[in-house]
Image: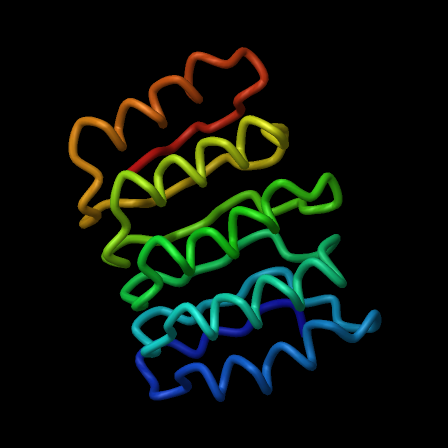
Length: 150
């Protein structure tokens, strides 16, 4: 299986923890995972990021929009994005209550490993001007390959 969409369910953090054990398996070749509007909080983001760090080479698309990530959850994902083995190309964190602090974490992570991320959705966030400034500096980096920013 290469694609798994589990959107609009009540998976929550416990469901993500179970799913994370699958993602850690070296035989897992999942490339696209959709967990939109699944009531995932920082704890679930931590499990997911940890699992993907242990087996990062296949995941290309991750949809986590509508989650309750906030800045602390984004920080866990940022540590994954910093990993040079991470090949994530598309990340949707729309409507995840991310503020300037989360934008700063994301921009820093993408500056340290900019070569793969092509699509980043952050609409519905609470970044304000200071958060957008972090992403603007990322876009000025010649190594940044972002093609789509929401």
